[in-house]
Length: 380
Ligand SMILES: CNc1nc2c(CC[C@H]3O[C@@H](OC)[C@H](O)[C@@H]3OC)c3nc(N)[nH]c(=O)c3cc2[nH]1
Ligand SMILES: [Zn+2]
Image (cartoon, rainbow, N blue to C red):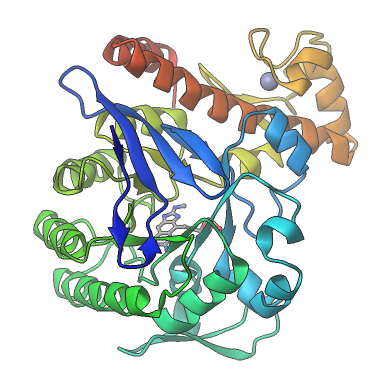
């Protein structure tokens, strides 16, 4: 069924269709409607923090099946400035990407910049990591910046609570993030753009439930789950998902921020997560590590000097279809840019293809056996 809620004159575009449940798990396959297309979930979203997915072109992203890519308001706000991007015709035009775009609000960067920041009810003052200038972000400024960028899905301004955090701090911060979500909603006046709230609560079950319930009552078209993948043990992350996801509306998208490796993806899908982003595949690729269904393969290792097989013989990516481990290792050792381009292409393709395989398993009602088989052979 198609659900497309209309909030006043603002048409909610992250509508949810075809939420299909399977087995005892909350896994579901859905369709996300945006002004730049209809996209299948579960989905992995390549991260293009500074308006480029490092080392790959929009054409290559399209070829490997990327649907929605991410950019980051914090970085683009500092450089080149979001007004400039608006003058260029918006982020899609600026980076020549006609698929979906989601922008993060900058909450994570501001708070992960450590002691140089000051948080008040109004917002967060911080020093630019580029030129050390004093900067300030508030819900209103972050939403205005994202309206300038023109992404299809934007995120409310939030505080990503560090791990570990005292209960009292987590409680006060989560309550403030909910007030900031309301301010983000009021500041969001651009139709044709969906604003997602971000659930916080630290690693405290009760705070997670309060955060989810409070944000659901504010009626957003989709929900990010934040404050995870910040160094907590994986079982703690799964426990927080178990507490949070069932409280979120079934017919709206759930986006687990900053996750992750394939073992985390398959567990999170089981809990009912639809969307993922992570810098991991592109980051590890740049130091010569490839992702495979049995774990990581460090192509740079001497063991592959004369290995003329592809990274993965069953992989359909450009790197595996045309080049050997020996060649890619040679390029990486010689600091040739093409080497890290090939490992990046492979890692992105691997995760995009992995989410496609999970979707197919859900639609064929065999997700739980898919998960068992994958976890049995994957070494973390
Ligand atoms: C890695 N783990 C993780 N990432 C997270 C991000 C995105 C990082 C943002 O920063 C860059 O990735 C480091 C990416 O640019 C991404 O946005 C696109 C989060 N963003 C917000 N607003 N709130 C959160 O609670 C949050 C939690 C995270 N946990
Ligand atoms: Zn490959």
